[in-house]
Length: 304
Ligand SMILES: [Ca+2]
Image (cartoon, rainbow, N blue to C red; front, side, top):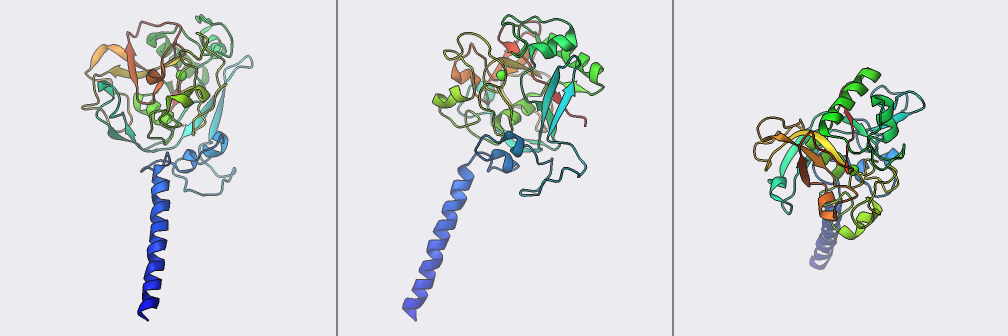
C-alpha cells in the first residue's frame, strides 16, 4: 500500500514537473506576458493569420468574416492606383523600455492600451507621399521605397492631408503605440530575440544595407505582420523627447508635456544605424524641422 501510494505520489510529482516545465517554456515565449495576444505572438511568418483576431477576441475563437467589427487589415485608397495597407493591433499591456538600454529607455514601466489601433503595415512610401503631398523629397528615389528627407513637421502635414483626403483621422504613432507594435508581444531587444546576429532577416541596417534605403516589405515581418519596424528608415513619433520615462503616461497616449520641447522622438533606427540603434526600446530624437535621408514615418488610425 505504502509502495503504491509512493507510486501515485511519484506520478503526480512527475506530472507536476512536466506541467511546470510547460508553464516555464510558455512564459519564455514572446507574448506570454500579461495582456499580449497569444495568437499574434506565435512563431512563424503568418502575419495575416496572427492579425485576424479583433480587439478583445478570445484565443482560439473561430474567425467569422460576417461578424461585425473592425477588420484585421484595412486598405486605404489614395487615388491613381496607390493604396496604403494598415494592420489592426489588438489592445493589451506591455513593458515599455529596457533596463539594459540607455538612460532614456528607463525605467521599464507598464503601459496599457485599452483600445486597438491600426498602424501602417509598411513605412510610408514615396508613391503614397506623392499621392498625398504632390511631391517626393526623397534622396533614394523609388515609388516603393520609404519616403525620407522628411521632417517631423512635414510628417504632421502628411497625416493632416491624408486625413483630409480620406475623411479618416490619421496621426503619427505615440512612442508607446510604436514600441507596442514593434515588440508584437516580445520582451527581447528585437522583435525576434536578443541576438544582433538575427537582425539581417528583419532589417536593413548599417553594414548590411548597401548604404541606402530598400523597397518596403522585403525583410521578415514581426509577429503583428509589420515590416521594417527595425531599420530601413527611422520613424517619427508624435512625442516630445524626454530624458527618461519618469512621469510618462501609462495609457499609450503621446507624451507631449514637459521634456525637451524642441525635440521630437524617432524610433527603430535606419539603414545607416548599427544594430543597437535599431532595438525595440531605443529612443532617438531630433529637431522637428530636421531630417535626412534616413528619416521617414508610419501612420496610425485610432478612430474606426
Ligand atoms: Ca523603420
